[in-house]
Image 1 (cartoon, rainbow, N blue to C red):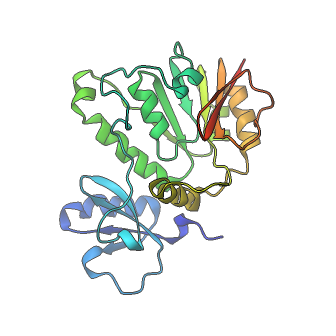
Image 2 (image 1 turned 120 degrees about the vertical axis):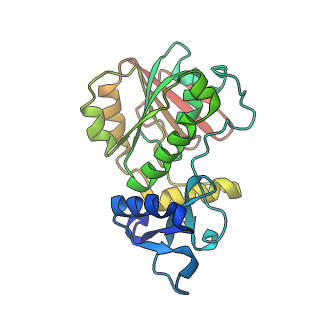
Length: 256
């Protein structure tokens, strides 16, 4: 099945974004196209474009307007104070006294960013070069936020590559490794979730190496591995030490 990486292009709308767009196209080895003079028929299915102050992922329907970017703002219902209270299911699973966390399946980075806002020291791993560009752009925008600058905070760091290999070569042992692998969908999702997750699935596909990833995380973690999964999925690492259940998902915690 063709991947997004094989069928993408970088587009730019004006000369102000030309230099950054050229560098991005070179890194990804994608063609560079002028948005103002696109042909009527495009072989590419997806595009990256610097738009509205951020890097966005576009499809053919959002070429002229819109697109998806890594959202660095607090999630709905999340307090804007720093550090945000460690009171939700994610924080309970990670451990309120935990300090260092590796998110080995970063995706759109929403859980990583939530953990960062709660005061955790977060390191991210992402295997897709396309998603890595979007994530890094998000972290750069995060670094410019007043509340980050004023507190002299360092945004999460990002490693790009196969998490199984990278976890085996860590120089420091993290207290917690967090996994949110891609499972086959079994229910309808909201329009916004469906769009972002569908595109992520186009980029990554299902994580067929989930068992190997869990094994690598178990070997590399200092104290715990936390696995996020849909509520219909069987526990991937056998019976967990504890579980935290939401409406549609579950956090299984494996303590060492």
